[in-house]
Length: 172
Image 1: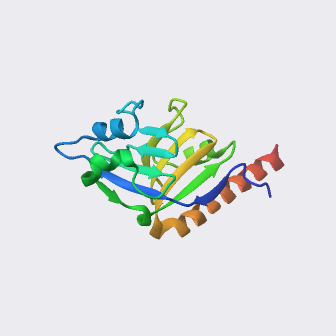
Image 2: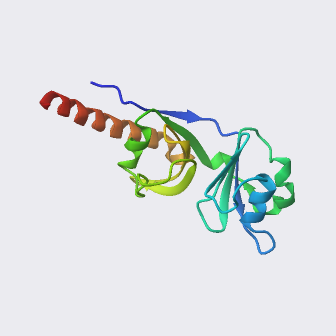
């Protein structure tokens, strides 16, 4: 049996916060406070171990490589809730990672522009937050209560895909 040309690995989450826009501060204000050079309307802003994942009109997730709310976010603190314990993060890496996951998502990502992207979608019955800077390394957030079964589901999809490829190779 052929090994899949990608791998799924669990990743520790140091900091993950939900940011809910308010009447007095918008997500654009928060994006400008955290990422001075970032386009506030983009779905993914990133800078030195911080990601702002905007997959909703009035809500975003801030993911950081370090524990503790970044100092730049302090003026927006009333809009922010720590949700790190609610999610698990995964990396899906490899030359075929993007094409593999694209075959199974509820969203069509094949025609997305190259470069950083973030979207909210479904993979089977799993709600995901998916983002990438490069298509060879996708990052995924899944609800913690579903993380173990999600790993198993990806393994089954990968097995099915490699079995199908092995069959094609035998027939070819």
